[in-house]
Length: 494
Image: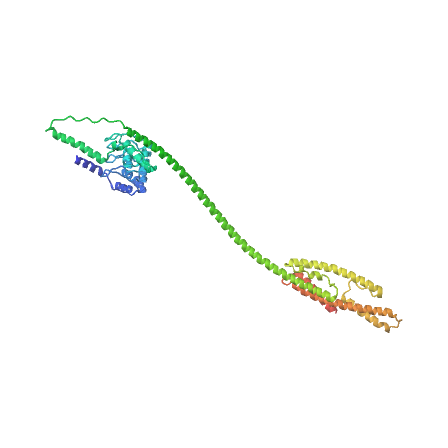
């Protein structure tokens, strides 16, 4: 018999190639990309068994390599394939406690009630291994709870009851208040594989001994097997307790999900608050930068204001000095200056900051000078008419300058000197005294006018040069040349 099994294994292992070994190593290393590449390029079969009776598909389920298992399922592997021990991939995943692999296999339409060689389903193996998650997933996919294996009846239900009560009590925090669990000492326990093997050997050994004893002892009657009993009251209570604990667990899970949702919302609000806080800090930083810039501008404007104030104070001082000079000249002369535009040339307006304003001011002064010159001509005309009435001198022109006035005085002196030499009748002394007094008054007035004119021209020239210094344009230069030419004509007339 052993030689026959070895012969079969040798025949199966003859098809095993190096590529199959590479696939097995890729699954062992959990390299899903290499598994997919080997399946597509080499056309390998993931369920091919090696000399030890295992395949890459069963190894992925045993190790819990979900990615490799998913790649093989996507390649179209047969999930119902069993290994040499009679286990499917679902059995191996349930036995070793891999709930994700169990879920993937069930989603791939793997039957949930398939039994192995001992008649155990995936739920039997999950309950025996103590994996609550695998048991719950199998129950969600309608795994039969009353299924029986070949050794004991209703073993899965008793194992599930014992395992579910202990694990749920630990998860739900009943450690401080122990549950009044039913006594499971009377329940039949699920035997392991070794116990099943031992039991089978024990059952086989009496048969062999009975064969040996046939020759020596008479044949005895076998005792009948005990009838299969119905589920006890403790099993039903355990099942009801499991249902109740599942309901409580569902409620707790719902509360946990609600708390997780609240925690998630709180984190989102905290993130929003942090984002708004960062934006506000950024705005504050920008405002601080703008405030620093405004402070710099304010300091700069303050310096400019101080400079303008100093210039204004210096200008006011110059104005006061000029006014003081004018008042001094007026005090010395006894009457205000009669030169046209004297006050306007010495005013603050002539010290305008731009040449255009200075030109406009000078043009206005020229117009005012023209008006005052016209008024002066009228006064001179009135004076000439008065002199014509007194002494009947020859008719003067429209404008009587200072040179003609001096010539008139000189002519009057000559006429006065020629009076005694003439052969005519002498004039009366009152008329001669009056003429002499008038001549002296005219001479004094002439001298006073010449002195005042010279001082005013000198003062005008100095102030005009100071006013247009650095701002001299063509119109101002032409006006200054006119004033200078007037002074030269005055000097030539002397």
